[in-house]
Image (cartoon, rainbow, N blue to C red; front, side, top):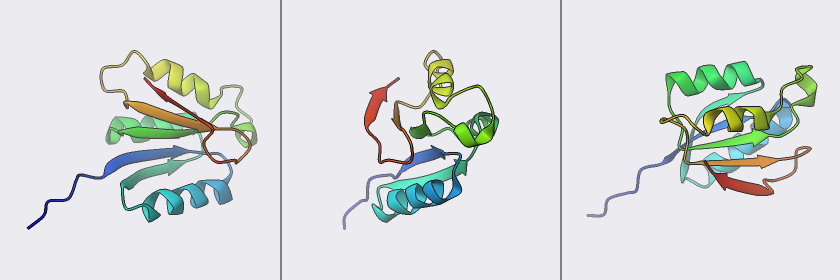
Length: 104
């Protein structure tokens, strides 16, 4: 009998729905992560994190399609000092695969 490692709880913050859906499929396809939320705005991300803490958050840096002046990095910076913050964040630019990862 083997025991399986628990899945990482992942949140995806991406304002463009095709990219958001692609990332969800990519993450779930690894069978290493459970996507607990896939959202388009900072406010939705904060709400999702309040309801179900994540181990990792994949954050779009620009969030240009939302019309909001805030960026995905604003979310990462605001979470850095929180005790329940995810231990890792990945971010990308322009719908490309994650190009930078950082522990919070």
